[in-house]
Length: 240
Image (cartoon, rainbow, N blue to C red; front, top):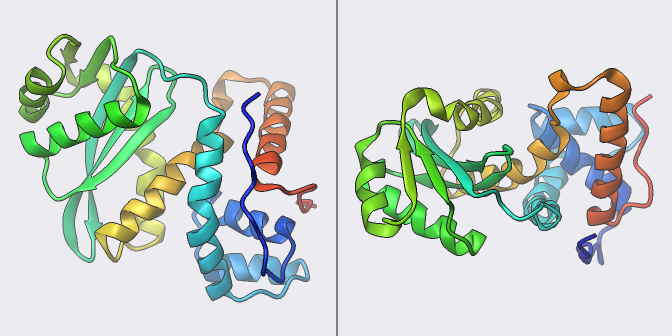
């Protein structure tokens, strides 16, 4: 078990259970801050959407980091892909890497998808994970091949559109959130949100289609217990 100290809530009027529940709602479901405010009001908790926004900005990344510290060591097969996103009406590119188990290794919002962008993402990945993969799987974007030869020439590189479905599937929740948020307002804001989102959302998305209902409930019970530990919540609000 990886130990981690929950973030400090000193100076906050609301208990940790309320704070962590609001952050969970926002990052787990395609909800706006106002919709989270409404859900909490229905349950008798009066908190403004602006306060919820500040909580998500302050604690979202801390919670995501706590969850990532509990992940096993990254697998040795990395899947990389990029997708376009709209930032204040301008097209940007979201680069994402997952291992063979579907764990998100990192995401990066960049202006381009050329060799320099691919090289930057490769180097960032190796620095963040502290390891070098055995295999890198990408689509046929030429930038990957050029950057691969320069940054990690000893690593096997497989380039094929059909081999990279794992990463492309991991983009789907991001696309849902982008639509719900009607795009992102700034590149920095997109990076901050998606960095926390990619750490929190997958934690509550086990492979449901591979589980029976009892197994899924048991797995979610474990995952909520981990969430309570990393947030410092003693108990969660019920969903009755």
